[in-house]
Image (cartoon, rainbow, N blue to C red; front, side, top):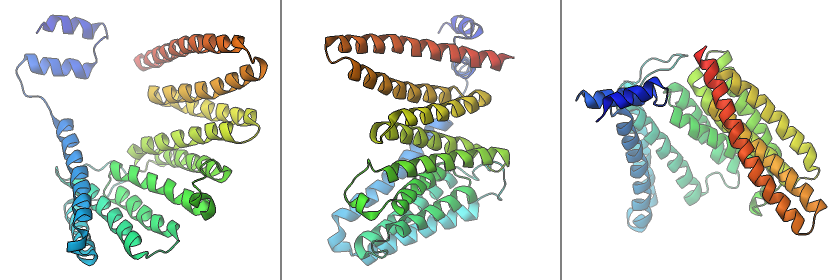
Length: 327
């Protein structure tokens, strides 16, 4: 391996420091970390175990019995939480590392088993009846508590997903859900509210210095849900120009916070969603003005030109963020 070539690429900022560090470790014949590779394998193991248990139970449900299956799930779930609680480090407002290599995975497995337990109860015994909000509200509380108590980012993502499901079910009338009418304005307004709530939660996590490392998860989910709801409102509700202005205002606010946080990821998200909304307005305008082949050619030129302009814009913004990082 030509190490001098890689050193030169690193000096010219064409190779990241982390990649260069790995190359130095390989060329020096020293050990290097496979921490993230092992964590990925362990996470996959938990998911495969959870899915495998579900398939095993489904195929043998007639011979095992519902009570025995529920008891087994409850015992495994309690065992996971008992082990996690016994080995957890004291609670802190800051990030708390896992006590050992298996602590994170037992928490994740325990939460998955708890959701399975609640779902099984509802599906088999209809414990909550048609009160589907209650069936999602209880797991949501348990997941949020577990995420903060055990300081688990993966469980927080599950809790946020469950929160969105609960809000959608609780606010949306049952008749709309039963008809699978996902273009209802109630669902769109719910999405807007969820997005705002999650973004505010992320801002408060940082401002109050309470689990700041959870802030990205809140911002990530909130940004996507808010901007998707704005686009849905443009596509479905009347007066699409009003919703295009709302989309632009949301994109401007998120872009400002992304530049403050030096986050290129959120800058890319904002540009893509804004481009989608702008393209929708342009397509409707051309479709209303030109009904012949000229409209098709105008759309063709628009997408070629706007695609090049968007790529150029992202390159400029990336350089701008790197320039500020170097100051």
